[in-house]
Length: 180
Ligand SMILES: [Zn+2]
Ligand SMILES: [Zn+2]
Image 1 (cartoon, rainbow, N blue to C red):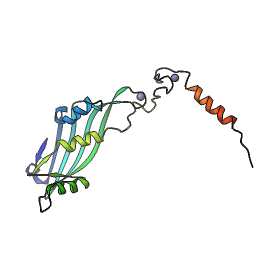
Image 2: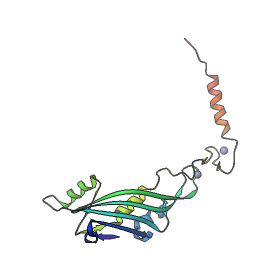
Image 3: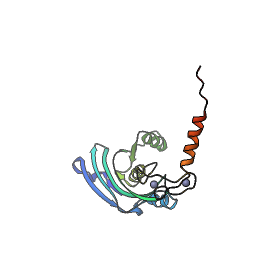
Image 4: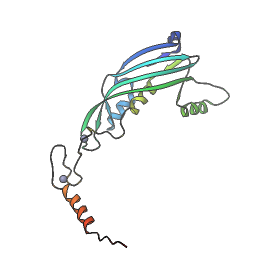
Protein backbone atom coordinates (compact mmCIF):
# COMPACT_ATOMS: atom_id res chain seq x y z
CA UNK A 1 0.00 0.00 0.00
CA UNK A 2 2.70 2.42 -0.97
CA UNK A 3 3.86 4.13 -4.10
CA UNK A 4 7.29 5.44 -4.93
CA UNK A 5 7.42 8.92 -6.35
CA UNK A 6 9.53 7.72 -9.29
CA UNK A 7 6.74 5.31 -10.31
CA UNK A 8 4.68 8.32 -11.40
CA UNK A 9 6.38 8.52 -14.74
CA UNK A 10 5.48 11.42 -16.98
CA UNK A 11 3.72 13.03 -14.04
CA UNK A 12 0.66 10.80 -14.20
CA UNK A 13 -0.31 7.31 -13.11
CA UNK A 14 -3.53 5.37 -12.74
CA UNK A 15 -3.70 2.50 -10.32
CA UNK A 16 -6.37 0.09 -9.16
CA UNK A 17 -6.13 -1.57 -5.81
CA UNK A 18 -8.20 -4.49 -4.62
CA UNK A 19 -7.55 -4.69 -0.90
CA UNK A 20 -8.37 -7.12 1.83
CA UNK A 21 -9.28 -6.27 5.40
CA UNK A 22 -5.81 -7.25 6.57
CA UNK A 23 -4.51 -4.21 4.66
CA UNK A 24 -6.45 -2.02 7.10
CA UNK A 25 -5.98 -3.45 10.57
CA UNK A 26 -8.01 -0.68 12.23
CA UNK A 27 -11.11 -1.80 10.32
CA UNK A 28 -10.88 -5.22 11.93
CA UNK A 29 -10.63 -3.64 15.39
CA UNK A 30 -13.57 -1.32 14.69
CA UNK A 31 -15.73 -4.27 13.56
CA UNK A 32 -14.72 -6.22 16.68
CA UNK A 33 -15.88 -3.28 18.79
CA UNK A 34 -19.37 -3.43 17.23
CA UNK A 35 -18.73 -0.77 14.58
CA UNK A 36 -19.22 -1.03 10.83
CA UNK A 37 -18.10 -4.35 9.29
CA UNK A 38 -16.47 -3.95 5.90
CA UNK A 39 -16.61 -6.81 3.38
CA UNK A 40 -13.83 -7.81 1.02
CA UNK A 41 -12.60 -6.71 -1.42
CA UNK A 42 -12.17 -3.01 -0.78
CA UNK A 43 -11.60 -1.42 -4.17
CA UNK A 44 -9.85 1.79 -5.06
CA UNK A 45 -9.18 3.56 -8.32
CA UNK A 46 -6.51 6.19 -7.90
CA UNK A 47 -5.19 8.70 -10.39
CA UNK A 48 -1.91 10.30 -9.32
CA UNK A 49 -0.77 13.59 -10.77
CA UNK A 50 2.63 14.86 -9.85
CA UNK A 51 3.62 18.49 -9.98
CA UNK A 52 7.15 18.85 -8.72
CA UNK A 53 7.13 17.39 -5.24
CA UNK A 54 3.36 17.67 -4.86
CA UNK A 55 1.17 14.72 -5.73
CA UNK A 56 -2.55 15.16 -6.22
CA UNK A 57 -4.72 12.06 -6.08
CA UNK A 58 -8.20 11.74 -7.55
CA UNK A 59 -9.65 8.68 -5.95
CA UNK A 60 -12.75 6.54 -6.03
CA UNK A 61 -13.65 3.79 -3.59
CA UNK A 62 -16.12 0.92 -3.83
CA UNK A 63 -16.87 -1.16 -0.79
CA UNK A 64 -19.64 -2.92 1.04
CA UNK A 65 -20.23 -2.47 4.73
CA UNK A 66 -22.55 -4.07 7.28
CA UNK A 67 -24.25 -1.50 9.51
CA UNK A 68 -26.85 -1.47 12.25
CA UNK A 69 -30.04 0.41 11.39
CA UNK A 70 -30.53 3.31 13.81
CA UNK A 71 -34.32 2.79 13.77
CA UNK A 72 -35.00 -0.96 13.82
CA UNK A 73 -31.54 -2.03 15.11
CA UNK A 74 -31.20 -4.78 12.49
CA UNK A 75 -27.93 -5.34 10.61
CA UNK A 76 -28.01 -4.55 6.92
CA UNK A 77 -25.50 -4.27 4.10
CA UNK A 78 -24.87 -1.07 2.21
CA UNK A 79 -22.70 -0.37 -0.81
CA UNK A 80 -20.38 2.57 -0.57
CA UNK A 81 -19.16 4.44 -3.63
CA UNK A 82 -17.35 7.69 -2.99
CA UNK A 83 -14.96 9.99 -4.78
CA UNK A 84 -12.28 11.85 -2.90
CA UNK A 85 -9.14 13.92 -3.36
CA UNK A 86 -5.83 13.73 -1.52
CA UNK A 87 -2.71 15.85 -1.71
CA UNK A 88 0.68 14.50 -0.72
CA UNK A 89 3.39 16.98 0.18
CA UNK A 90 7.02 16.29 1.08
CA UNK A 91 7.69 16.28 4.80
CA UNK A 92 9.97 19.23 5.38
CA UNK A 93 12.55 19.20 8.10
CA UNK A 94 13.60 22.80 8.45
CA UNK A 95 14.43 24.57 11.63
CA UNK A 96 10.92 23.73 12.76
CA UNK A 97 10.50 20.48 14.66
CA UNK A 98 8.95 17.55 12.86
CA UNK A 99 5.90 17.69 15.09
CA UNK A 100 5.11 21.30 14.23
CA UNK A 101 5.31 20.64 10.50
CA UNK A 102 3.08 17.58 10.82
CA UNK A 103 0.48 19.61 12.67
CA UNK A 104 0.38 22.27 9.97
CA UNK A 105 0.01 19.84 7.08
CA UNK A 106 -2.72 18.00 8.99
CA UNK A 107 -4.67 21.22 9.43
CA UNK A 108 -4.56 21.91 5.71
CA UNK A 109 -5.70 18.41 4.79
CA UNK A 110 -2.33 17.62 3.27
CA UNK A 111 -0.62 14.28 3.72
CA UNK A 112 3.10 14.47 4.38
CA UNK A 113 5.42 11.89 2.85
CA UNK A 114 9.07 11.09 3.39
CA UNK A 115 11.89 9.59 1.33
CA UNK A 116 9.89 9.79 -1.94
CA UNK A 117 7.43 7.15 -0.76
CA UNK A 118 3.67 7.76 -0.57
CA UNK A 119 2.08 5.70 2.18
CA UNK A 120 -1.49 4.99 1.09
CA UNK A 121 -2.78 2.78 3.86
CA UNK A 122 -3.78 5.42 6.42
CA UNK A 123 -5.37 7.95 4.08
CA UNK A 124 -7.36 5.24 2.27
CA UNK A 125 -8.55 3.78 5.54
CA UNK A 126 -9.67 7.25 6.58
CA UNK A 127 -11.64 7.63 3.34
CA UNK A 128 -13.39 4.30 3.94
CA UNK A 129 -14.45 5.39 7.41
CA UNK A 130 -15.59 8.80 6.19
CA UNK A 131 -17.78 7.09 3.57
CA UNK A 132 -19.80 5.34 6.28
CA UNK A 133 -23.11 7.15 6.94
CA UNK A 134 -23.32 8.74 10.40
CA UNK A 135 -26.94 7.74 11.00
CA UNK A 136 -27.43 4.53 9.04
CA UNK A 137 -31.01 3.54 8.17
CA UNK A 138 -31.77 0.19 6.48
CA UNK A 139 -34.33 1.81 4.17
CA UNK A 140 -35.94 5.23 3.99
CA UNK A 141 -39.31 3.77 4.86
CA UNK A 142 -38.03 1.90 7.94
CA UNK A 143 -40.64 2.35 10.69
CA UNK A 144 -38.25 1.42 13.47
CA UNK A 145 -39.23 -0.01 16.83
CA UNK A 146 -42.31 0.97 18.82
CA UNK A 147 -41.11 3.24 21.64
CA UNK A 148 -43.70 1.66 23.94
CA UNK A 149 -43.47 -2.11 23.44
CA UNK A 150 -40.25 -2.35 21.37
CA UNK A 151 -41.85 -4.40 18.58
CA UNK A 152 -40.38 -4.09 15.05
CA UNK A 153 -43.01 -1.97 13.30
CA UNK A 154 -41.77 -3.10 9.87
CA UNK A 155 -43.04 -6.59 10.61
CA UNK A 156 -45.99 -6.11 12.96
CA UNK A 157 -48.39 -3.39 14.02
CA UNK A 158 -49.15 -2.77 17.63
CA UNK A 159 -51.85 -0.77 19.35
CA UNK A 160 -49.73 1.30 21.70
CA UNK A 161 -48.53 3.81 19.09
CA UNK A 162 -52.05 5.10 18.62
CA UNK A 163 -52.62 5.96 22.27
CA UNK A 164 -50.00 8.67 22.77
CA UNK A 165 -51.20 10.42 19.63
CA UNK A 166 -54.79 10.38 20.85
CA UNK A 167 -53.73 11.53 24.29
CA UNK A 168 -51.82 14.44 22.84
CA UNK A 169 -54.80 15.30 20.67
CA UNK A 170 -57.12 15.21 23.66
CA UNK A 171 -54.83 17.44 25.65
CA UNK A 172 -54.71 19.97 22.82
CA UNK A 173 -58.49 19.83 22.44
CA UNK A 174 -59.04 20.48 26.10
CA UNK A 175 -56.87 23.58 26.21
CA UNK A 176 -59.03 26.58 26.88
CA UNK A 177 -58.09 29.18 24.32
CA UNK A 178 -58.97 32.59 25.56
CA UNK A 179 -58.98 35.41 23.10
CA UNK A 180 -58.45 38.87 24.42
ZN1 LIG B 1 -34.38 -0.31 9.88
ZN1 LIG C 1 -46.12 -0.94 20.61
